[in-house]
Image (cartoon, rainbow, N blue to C red; front, side):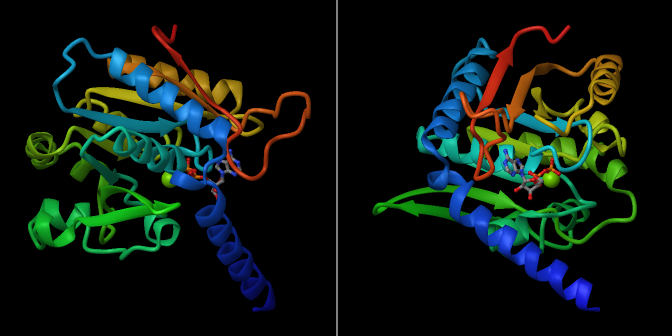
Length: 254
Ligand SMILES: Nc1ncnc2c1ncn2[C@@H]1O[C@H](COP(=O)(O)OP(=O)(O)O)[C@@H](O)[C@H]1O
Ligand SMILES: [Mg+2]
C-alpha cells in the first residue's frame, strides 16, 4: 500500500514536472529550436504546400517520448499559425489527460463508435507564457475499446481523418509503439507520414530495426526520426529536464 502511495506521489510529481518544464512554452531553447527544425523538415517533406496533413508518431517501445513529441510538435505547428488537432491514438495507455490536465473522455473511440460528437469531445489546449497564448485542439483517446487496432484501422477512422483534414492544417496522431501492438502499423495506412521517435538510452538497436522492418513491410511513408533525450553538449549526461535535442533526420530511413 505504502509503496503504491509513494509511486502515485512520484507519478504526480513527474506530471507536475512535465507541465512545468517540458511542454510547449516551457521547453528549453535548444528543444524549441529543434522542434522548429522538425516542423520545417516535415513541411519540406511534402511537395504540395497548402494541403492538410496527418502525421503519425510512433516508436519501438513505450516510454520513448512519442506523446511528448506529439504534444510539442502540435504546439510548434500552432505557434506557426497552423490550425492543429492532436489526436491521442494510443487507446491502450492514455496519458494526455494527466499530462495536459484535460478531461479523459469522451474521445476518439467515442466519436468513432458514434456515442459522442466531435464538437462535444474536442478540447482546446491553451499554453500561455509571458502573456502570449498558443492554442491547439486535442482529442483524447476516450473510453478504451475492446479492439483498438480494429478501430484505428477502420473505414470510419479513415473517413474521420478525411473530415478533420477539411478543418485543420495539421493533424498529429500519437500512436502506440510498433513493438507492442499492431495499432501503429494499421494506422500507418491512414496517415500521410510517420515520424519514428528514438530515445537515447532507451531504444535498442534490434527493436528499432524490427520497427523499421515492420513499417517497410506495411509500405508506410516514414518521414524521419526524432532523436529524443540526446546528451547535452560537453556534459556527457542526459538532459533530465526536457529535451536537449530532438534532432530530425529526414529523407530515406534505409
Ligand atoms: N527527453 C526526455 N527527458 C526526460 N524525460 C523524458 C524525455 N522524453 C520522455 N520523457 C519522459 O518519459 C516518459 C515517457 O514519455 P512519453 O512521451 O509518455 O513516451 P511514450 O508516449 O513513447 O510512451 C514520460 O514520463 C516523459 O516525461
Ligand atoms: Mg504515449
